[in-house]
Amino acid sequence: MSVKTQNISSLIWNTCDDELRGLFRPHEYGSIILPFLVLRRLDCVLEPKKDKIYELYEKYKNKVDDPSPIIQNEINSPFFNFSKYDLSRIKSDPQNVMINFNNYLNGYSKNVYDIIENFNLTPLIEKLNKNNRLYQLIDKFTEVDLHPDRITNHQMGTIYEELLRRFSEMSNEESGDHYTPRDIVRLLVSLVFEGDREDLQGKGKIRSIYDCCCGTGGMLTIGKHNSIFFLIITNKLKILSLQHHQKSSLNGVFSQENRYPNGRQIK
Image (cartoon, one colour):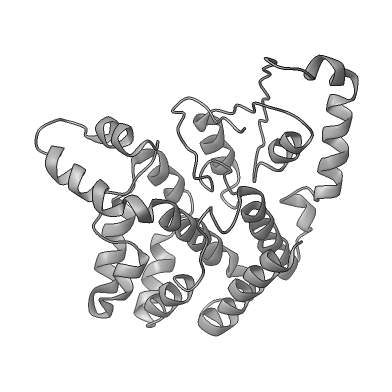
């Protein structure tokens, strides 16, 4: 793990002690921190397009039944948030943090909202707000810059896996139950491609990889670094993977380059 990802993981981990201690048991921290990590990443990805998305939604919401395709086409992204709020703007209005936070969550496009629902955040958010911790938690996460220009998809997956490992250990579970160590991933990827290296080399070669348990997309990203050119995985598969284990992260959600409504292309 690089110094950068280690520092971010430690910062987020320390947030648990600062804001959640006494209100939640340590083994419950992951149910809150991991969803907030995903939300913060989404926030950073959409931040440059936030005002444009809101303007498009306001323009077309009463003209068409579903403005989603228009918005997706205009911003060149399969997901968006049409709420006028993001985490930073929610923080600027502490008196209405709960109302604005719910408005923010409800503003996500359906493909992301379906994922958020699987985190079952509602009772946790209500408990945080009741005990005056929701604002503090949002404030802490807005201090972490997770924009793809700063944190790559691979680094994002590493941060997520490190936090998942720590939370698993705190709940007396085997961390390997939730993620596969990268050394093992590299070995598996090498074995998968060992007999096909000649066929995979050269220009114009395209292959599809199906990973039914993609999780953080570790095998896909390691495969990319092993001279694989196009890795295609459907958004539906990503969502199903997260539904199967709500603590999994999605490579597509963590990506800035979500331009393919039926698949993911990694160059």
